[in-house]
Length: 138
Image 1 (cartoon, one colour):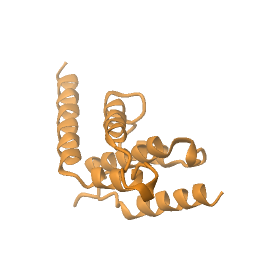
Image 2 (cartoon, rainbow, N blue to C red):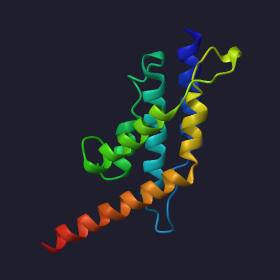
Image 3 (cartoon, helix red, strand yellow):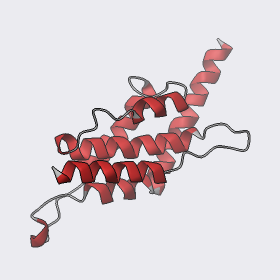
């Protein structure tokens, strides 16, 4: 019982500390929101049934921030794929004291702060803007 509560608390603290920055014109920085969303998805996928996120409205809030580009959209699927890729790459620790468990939170947080994720998201945002521009020209 204590473990799910502790994991939920850690998630809340993490999400609160991951500020969704605004630009000078007071617009939401979508790259920042997308990074936060990948962290959220990484933790959800990593902990699975061990943590109960059924009442967490975080995905809906993030979706509102970024003009409904999450969920079953090309960007949403790509971000989910990035989180899935990270979770799949986490190897169990081989130190005997850790019983072969995975360092999920640490791995997800490291990925959140990585240059690799920043590059992927910049590329994704650039592709999305290009698609929007083409649609406006048609």
